[in-house]
Length: 342
Ligand SMILES: [Zn+2]
Ligand SMILES: [Zn+2]
Image 1: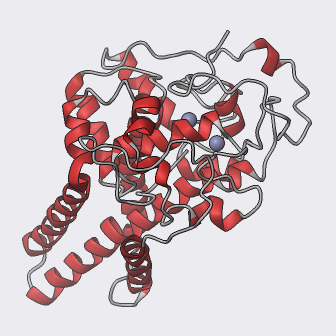
Image 2: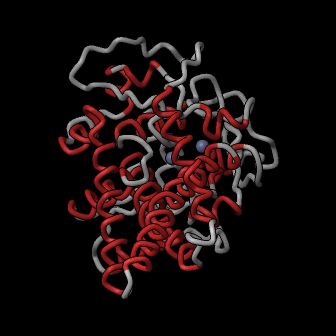
Image 3: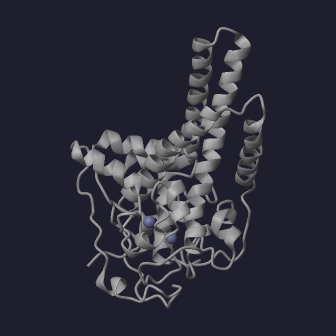
């Protein structure tokens, strides 16, 4: 699964493409300095949450709840399973809400994220994969994120990989002019205001109220954002390097229980590459996938439908799953939806 505003300057969908989509590999690695600076600054803020003045145990709980809302519902379900793979459908207001939760994780515009991830599925661990960790773990984890990739400045690339989403005015609005960043900033202001509001509502002294507001800001906004970043990136890096393989996919994908635990289900990544459209990424009873559990709960009350079942293609199911992957690619599949089940 992919992440952040790689090279943040996302394509202006009204402009003529300037770069060739044939640039299958990023030959010259040009750093996007403003985005790297933002990542560094936000990371440097994290230690402030562990000072005696700011550390609170409820911060851990807030982090886990925030991860479920913005990471699991926003990124796993909204950006990944719903937009990228159309693994389930929801009432339109809920679909918009999932997308907004994903935007609040500061992982790029939905169009950019989906485009990147579909490129990953089509070229997984071969030339053209935006973030394979096979040669360089750091590159696959986060180096690629602040590195320009001319392919994703090209309208042709978007037309090829996200044609089904290009007609969505809301998604286009978020993408053009990096408006998703403003939405993210607005959510930071709103959450911070809520924190200070709660502080002044429940504490009798200004000093205590301010302390609560600062603690809330650090744990609910900063630590949560960095946490969701890294666990998302671990799916790209660790789950393509370490873990077991249940299926003989043509890539290095692995089922990594630790990443699955952190991400509420996305770490069962070999399962996912074997059957990208399936809504559930846990294929065995003990491969817990809380993101899917959430969808099942919505389905029970009629708020989710067309939930795509697990149906692994025969040629993948019967392949020798004890191999290390990275076999010569057989089929690249549909760039829009990945390989279809058969
Ligand atoms: Zn995927
Ligand atoms: Zn992958």
